[in-house]
Every structure is written in C-alpha cells, then in structure tokens.
Image (cartoon, rainbow, N blue to C red; front, side, top):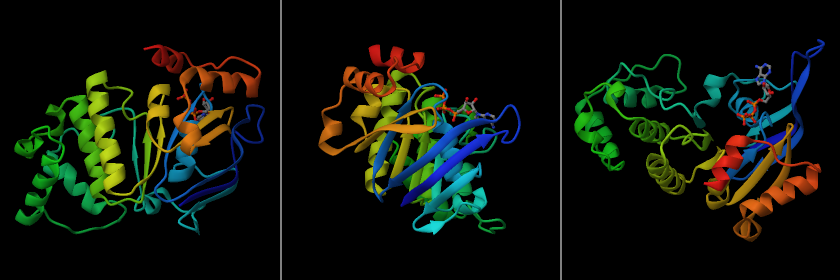
Length: 266
Ligand SMILES: Nc1ncnc2c1ncn2[C@@H]1O[C@H](COP(=O)(O)OP(=O)(O)OP(=O)(O)O)[C@@H](O)[C@H]1O
C-alpha cells in the first residue's frame, strides 16, 4: 500500500545549514497493517508523514501509494486516498462551522470544485454516523464545533476522516493533547475504525505503552532512520524496558525523548 524507496529529505540543501532529516529510508507498509511509530526527539517522524502525504517533496527517492509513483503529486490529490490527524484537536475541524457543515467537508475532500449540497438524506446519514461515537453529538449537529471538548473534537475528526473513505490513515500523536480518559476513548474509536474500514494505518505516538499495545507492527526511528522494526509475535513480547535496551544496543547510547520516557513511567 505504501512503499518508500531510498527516501532522503535534506532541509536547506546546498547551504551551510543543510540538515538531512530522512536518510536512505526504505519501507513497505502492506494493506491493512497498523504500524505504530516511536522515536527520539527530532527523529524525523513528522517529516516522514509530510513526505507520505505530499506536504513535502523528498530530496531524492520515491513514494509509491498503491503501486503508483506519487513522488511529484500534489498533496490535494493524495488526500483522496489518505486521511491525516494531528495532535491539536483544533486542527482537524473548523471551529466556527457547525458539526454538519464540518461533516459536509468530507464529501468534498480531494476535489477542487465540488458542488454537493446538504440535504435531508445526507443529514440523516451524518446523524447515524455521529451516533456511533456514543458522545451524544447527534443532537448537536447545528452547534458550532467550537463548543465541543478536545476529546469530542478529536473523535469528530476521526469520524470525518473515515467518512472521506481513505485507504490510509496517518495519525500524528492524535491523542497527545487529551487527558487519559479522552485519550482512551479516542484510541478505542481508532482501533474500531481501523478494523471496520480496513485502514492501512501509521500512528506516531510518544506513548511507548500505546506503541506496544496497539497495531501489528512497531517502528522506532532515530536520526532519520528506522532502527527497529518489529511485528507479529515478536511485537507481542515487547516491553518498554526491552525497547529501551534494544535502542541502547543499536545506538550505543541512551534513548532521548523526555516526553516518551515520562509517559513510559506513568
Ligand atoms: N521545514 C523545516 N525546515 C528545517 N528543518 C526542519 C523542518 N521541518 C523539520 N525540521 C527539522 O527536522 C528534524 C526532524 O523533525 P520532525 O518534526 O520530523 O521530528 P519528530 O521525530 O517528529 O520530532 P518530535 O518527536 O520531537 O516531534 C528536526 O530537527 C526539525 O527541527
């Protein structure tokens, strides 16, 4: 589903400030896989998502989606096959628009000039979809999204992503700004949607326990490289101390990411 070939990304290339953030990266993610990604500070995790989604063009190498070379394809065209959710609950929805108007956006995603109107049938469909969230949002369809809590907004963002019918979900620390209770609700919804919609999913997280508990494959990144790639039964046997030990053995230094380490102790 996703294939990255000899991918490199250097910012400010050809200047004294040149910085290589993704280095000779080769990765294949098969259809239906749920990959969790963890890494040290500045490892290149978000940059990797920017390259997959088309926000950035690699300095060299290729990005293939469903067998098609999309390396030079603009972001809006790739948006038809993928959904992306960010850490900030305010980023995925428009505050000053109603829930139903926000949901209308999903019908227009990836198209430049769509003419689609909000009719009774579509409203009933949105209502049915909101019921699935089990948050009572179906009775608030005409309220502005700004009235929702962070957890409710992130759940709505997740639902909107699914309604746009993507093949791929890129989740960039999408529970990091939520309290533990809401993070658990959003993770529960995530696993439900990933399974029901057979989404090929990549999830960046700073929560090592989440990285181990969710998905069928775990990647650890450091300095622009994937240094650990564990799946199946081997992933089931992982623990946080084991992961940290693997990192130290490979890199001959201690793992550095305070947010990750503090989260792992919790
Ligand atoms: N547009 C840019 N221009 C220059 N440097 C950049 C740019 N975007 C990212 N970087 C640098 O690239 C490196 C990797 O950033 P990235 O956000 O991908 O890391 P990350 O693994 O997601 O980090 P974190 O876990 O701290 O969020 C960082 O040193 C960052 O400062």
